[in-house]
Length: 484
Image 1 (cartoon, rainbow, N blue to C red):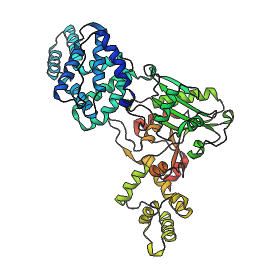
Image 2: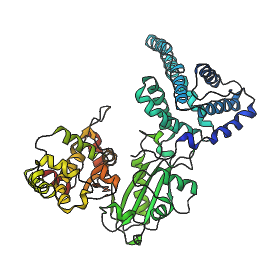
Image 3: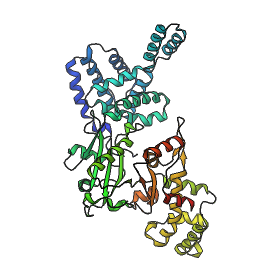
Image 4: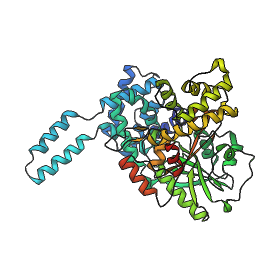
């Protein structure tokens, strides 16, 4: 749901060069000589030879781990250009042998007996697996090797969008990670002020929805009326994969600033009737497209239900990150009938009052002009004039604006956060005017926030209707906004 803001993998894991050197040395394999950072062609040839040696597997498991460690150390020693060249070598020189695949297909087509067909199918399966998959798998045996591969994919993702040769490697790595990060392997942990500092530091670094301003801010988010849960993988015990921050409150919260206020009084959580999920962060960019957020929410609801039986409502207080960009498109295109008659009247009057008769503009131009007013939400006239059109248009954005789902599935909500929660079976419950008046909140969505409601007896139905038909579950309040 969010971009990773922590220091890059290659800043945080430089210590691996020492760790992996210690693995390589006792095995007495020939070490790779120091490589130049940009990996020129003569150094690239040494990398190719090391990759081939890893695949040949001479000397048993210890030697195989040592060679993989040497290869990993080589990758970590390169700059961004050199790492891209490294990945291109792995992608192209160790791709599937397409001629061998075609030959295996021909053999399968020609097979006449059950035994021949079984042998041909086995051969075809073996030929379809690119040698680079075996290369990637060897890193799994190294300390922090899984994390190494997760962050390798994080670097690979933007490169693969621009270069077709790297798409196959990215797909192979994603498939490996999907098998390793099956939800059955993940562990849910509640984080508290007593949790290891190394993990809490990463929570601060990875929080990208509502920035954590130091340790006092974090301590507030871990107080008795707050909960923070994260998924971990057994091979990455100090690395949260995805985490959710929860406020235990009375009634559905519509404004985030009170939830983040370190001076706000602490509520007795036993008296809370609502759990508000106010921040959900994907902490590992390299796991993009490998979804386990829905399992996180379901598990957290189970945990909270068990701890606090009085909780009746489970809802989010979510940002709407794409709303302002969509509004900018609408205003630039000049969509006809964008505003209702009542909205046009109010906007025109507000423009006259704000800018004077000489500066009066039409309603649509007035909408642009009023939105351009610095700190418009602090001007009562401007704020009231913008309220109705922005709420109505935001309801339209969340419920009607789509992008293709791909792979034969129904169209999906244009807003990424909306898509996440609708996919998980939530319904769009309520829009909150000036729910986030921070600079980021106003920049992203004119300060609007939305509650997605997780009604336990409707989750499965909502999920099926959204995934199968693209149908968005709406509350009566949101339907009313649409009718306006």
